[in-house]
Image (cartoon, rainbow, N blue to C red; front, side, top):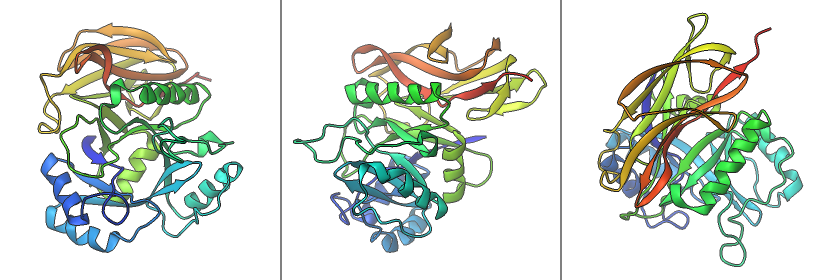
Length: 323
């Protein structure tokens, strides 16, 4: 599986961004992204300019929109049709999500714990989701300085609660990119076996083949007791697992500051509890007996002067009782 840096949350002058569409794509190319989604607020009017710009820069694009309402913001990617965001009330969000799925799209909750009224109307997620299993992804990290923000800690806690409830919801990071700046951002990486396209990016998000990094990229894969190879997001049987952890410090080399991001340890986390702590090495192999639940890898270290921060983490592997 090959890992590609992608940005899933962007804005241009077609809504409230400063970028032209071409300028956004050029900035993404300059920073080393392999793909970018265009998600202007409540409009897809930039798509006509988007595809020629992608072709010029050699990037892959994902067509999207950010539902921007008084009850929260929702990212919609790849919908082949139109689900009207206007007038959707908090108890009606499940029906809207179902419509988007019927049209081939996926949905993600943007910055769920951002400040809302009276600072930013509608930024905080207030839609009443009845079926969380229908939500494809959640922005656990959002905007600049994401690992240290209270909003991130709250979103991370929500994500783990949903995993504990059996929801297969993928964690992502969203730059919420409106203009070029010098702030520190985290990144989303999708794991793809075949060519990188809009469809394979969406498939990776659905399958949980996604890692997040605010510095070096941490990935995890391995084999189960039957010798079957697994990737993050996959289902495996409880029992002996061989786990391979890899740290790549050369991802997006122009988009994070090595002097401010300092790894200290690797952790395996199962069902919210630390299962193992390991030294930071470029590559290592571990053996353990996994109980049912979910299993994730974390890279912990100092982030801009604050110790004990998540610098990178994987989405989980899902482990089931044999029977």
